[in-house]
Length: 117
Length: 113
Image 1 (tube, rainbow over the protein chains, first blue to last red):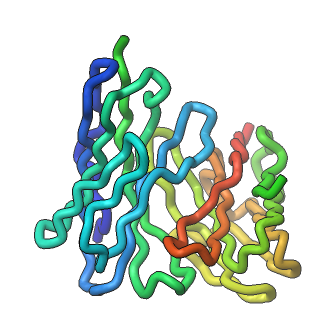
Image 2 (image 1 turned 90 degrees about the vertical axis):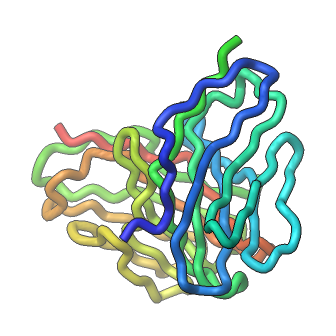
């Protein structure tokens, strides 16, 4: 069964505007971590932001914030003030189990974001 | 500089040949992972290793083999048994930071001719 679902294959946003990339997940483990990665055309995977299942507040990292709705099992990425350099593929990922254990991650299919000038 | 190196960046292979992709890290991370990415798709786990001399199969291990003789190195061999090996291969490590995020290498693009 698909554990991470990203329903938007592609998204467009105007430069300087905000955009939300959707991610829903499925797990029965009470302990898990949610991650967002950016993949530019060069192929490298760049870690953006993390949200733990027990974190009380939504995570923020600069222009990135994570809209975590635990009951709905969603972890949407919000990018504020979009820049041309934000054009890339974005992947949502989940790690189940206690945070200190090096369990493997499950990735969604990704969303391709294009920022228009 | 601390990081993960993968070589080569581009690799071409004739059908029926085995080929080995290199992954080296100097981050002192215990866990290492190999992922496969097909065009327009997400990452799928091939193999992972949480400690030297130990590794486990991921979701798509058939046709691949790995070894973990040193903490710094986790080479992946794509064997002739892998029927559709053309893909982008990413190596990652898992650290001991609070979030335990994975750090990725630059990837190797394998093309079977």
